[in-house]
Structure formats: structure tokens, C-alpha cells
Length: 207
Image (cartoon, rainbow, N blue to C red; front, top):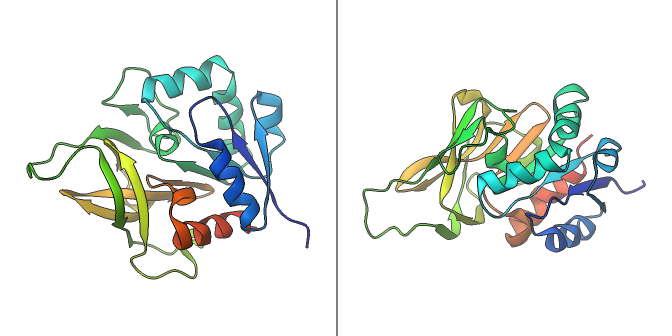
């Protein structure tokens, strides 16, 4: 069987190298897209992201990648995996900025407001996720696998059926979501050892 090709979107806001390595490690072939044409030829897409919401959206818009990503995700139903800031960019808006998000899911990005002063922001380190619905992304995993997080904002879904996993950090928040062909994780699978490796393998092998 030929290895699946996974296109990683490089808009200057992500850990491209570690994602490339992980995709290759689980049997996929990683390619990088920096232009709309490269993105539009993708079989599967990863939207990574580290940094601020407005900067991320500004970069996607300026490079012409937002419209191409919309065509792939919403019209062609190409499998998309958005990670960390990438997940937040799928929402309609963020309390971190003023630029509208992609709006692929009915959700908003909110800032942690925690009553427990002992809990530091950003939420950083390992934490368990509780799987809330069946998904090909979590096949072959425990009910509460652990993943690595680094974030100060979280996604609040307006449609509960989009919630894939939740995690507790002062509040219960959506740590991953799935809406049809669109998948997203607040945690970093590429930094999450065996569970991250399994999740990436599941995405690479999606039919």
C-alpha cells in the first residue's frame, strides 16, 4: 500500500518540522503547502499553529490560504486536522483579537478565567482527555489518554455534537472536536509520545 500524503500548511505560525517527522514516523508522506495552489492539491491537510489569533488569521488571509482552505474543508470535504492555534482559528471569533476566524465550526475562542489561583495560565503540560464520542481519530486508545498542552485560550462549541474530547483545568473545556471531515485538537499530538503517535497514525490512515 502506498503511503498517504499529508499536506502541512506553512503560514509562518507552526511547528512544521516536528509535524513532518511525526507524519513520516507513522507511515505517511509529509509535504508542505505555502501557496493556495499547493493547498488545493492536498489529499489531507494539517493546520498547525502557535501564537496569537489575529496574527494567524492575518497570515492566512494575506497569503490567500483562507479561501483555499475553505474550498478544501467545506466544499471538497478533504480531511483536515487543526492543532492548537489551528483549532482556535476554525472558530468564528476569539477573545484574543478582533479579526474574524474561519468559522468552520459554530464555536468561539475564550480566555481561561480560573477561580483557582494555584492554576497557572497558560495551561502547560500533560493532561488527560475524556473521549465523548466515537471517532476514527481515537481508535485503539484508552478512554482517557494523556496529551501535551500549551495554551491560554480554549474553544467553546455551541453545538455539543462537535465535542470529541473534554479536559479539566479549573473548568471542563473542549480539548478536541470533530465536525464531519474537520478534526481539531487543542493539545499537540506531535509532542504527545505514544498517544500522539497513535492519533497521527489514525489521521494519516483515514479513508
